[in-house]
Image (cartoon, rainbow, N blue to C red; front, top):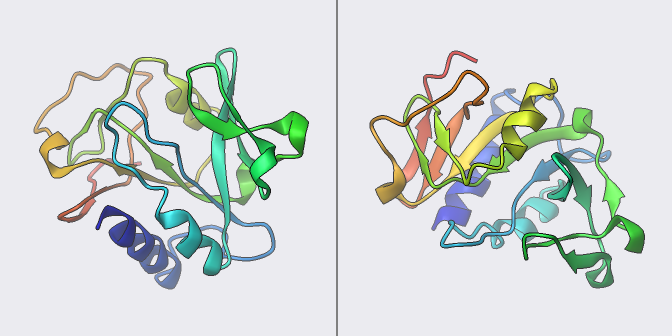
Amino acid sequence: MICARLVACVADLCRTGRLRVSPGAGAAVALYQAVRGEADVSGAAQALAEAGWRVAYPVTDGPRMAFYHAARPEAWRTGRFGIREPNPEAGAERVDPARLAVVVVPGVAFTARGDRLGYGGGYYDRWFAEGAAPVRIGVCFSCQLASWLPVDAHDQRVDFVVTEEGVVPCACGR
């Protein structure tokens, strides 16, 4: 149910002109590989690809993160946190941040303001702070929506939160 809502949210954003790039010509949507009970979005990958999007995933390197598209099964590896990720050394292609229309973000909890609590690594916060401007969609189960979360000045908000119950447009003022 979450995957269907996520795909519909991306389609609605495209249809209403909210995305800075459209499907095709290398435009991409970034997903994540779920770990530790995160909402699994892997079921959205095929539908997004069929709609013309390249599907990218994060790869961490020290404190940095970049997004890569891996078209072949052999272009994947297990990363340093035990998470499956594209392998640049095996042919995974780095996606230009300007070609990312949407970045789907995992989290432990989210608020309707778009605040996000992750696992504390700060990878998404640093990546968004570097100036990338895709639409940010948090994904979680409805029980992970909180009325308040502790936030710091460097924390980056999401624009929407998708749960199994629906899509929450966030009042983040971004």
